[in-house]
Length: 514
Image (cartoon, rainbow, N blue to C red; front, side, top):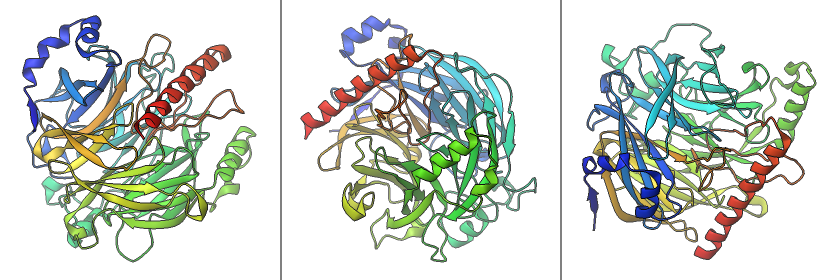
């Protein structure tokens, strides 16, 4: 039975106190989801088919006992927050950042403080330095936010106040793979192609220019930046200077797939939580490329940076090596009718999930964790998303529920995730909202920066990595390699201890479900 919820009737609850939520929803319900909605299709490179939103930001409270949600807030007037396309929750503060997607004018990055009842308070806004802003990353020290701009392919570094999460100034450094040259392809409204399509003529124009689609810092030391370039079928590797917040060297580029002569279109990259493995989702070829990660080289780059050595010594050396390519759709399904959306490694490290837009499915793969094939994938199955164009999805904190944004059918669908089999099952919980494109997990932190129910899940999918030989572990998610630098070692250790306790509790829950 499908349960559809009247969202407007829930708005009155948003004024309730935190204690009323605890009484009604039960313990451990302080987990919010911040959902972005498209508002002006004309200003996008791609072509949504759903409903344009008049209010672009929806905040839900998640109930972990049955995977249901309650709508707490609707915010973000379309004239003020146009086409919010990606959001990033701060790793230790109740602050969420969202960016606007506009093919003509520079994107904007907007910061909101998030209250426990879902209320949003705008605390700042900065120019993203480029067009069609599509991705946000916070560096390991929490001192910089990096914006990736899809249309003109630029990367912009924006300073942050590490104590408050507020913007500390405008863009401080930029990188442009075009070297300042003008775009070759035209915008959709000027006769250009619809980037939602995957036919040969569309692909030709999509790949006439570079198109940076994400920037992910390595989850170990945060000094190597990986940028999938959809327009050039490349993954770019940068030395990111953590002291200055700048891209001082593009030291390598490598193909994002098998080099078959067919376009790949790399979109995102995600890292395994325990293995030295990375996964790149190729949007156009509908494949996952599996790479080994040379962690020793990453550490060598970090050490050289700390010693102020000449970083040119790393030119032409790669931290990635391709070991597998696997399709995300059934073998007989036409690739031209599908494009891939999100990729995420489950926090257990046992599964990789991908959304297929066109096939309208979540493809799930099991990770081989031992032997010569460690890190490689085998298919579990393909699961319909109960809607069209699943642009994005996210897990709850436990990793046992999956929230899917079906962009073109104006809905969120919630699935339970079987940790033993890797299969998902529709819970019957479905929510109507206009053109949802991104689902951001927002745990509620107390004043010390400790999450009340755990770290944010993948993309916000937490990288579970405890380094017993160091006072600070490496905590990263699919898109954000961030571990805040604490002023006081004692405070840092206290946070690490509480983090470890939460991870142990999560592991207990997983063992109980097996």
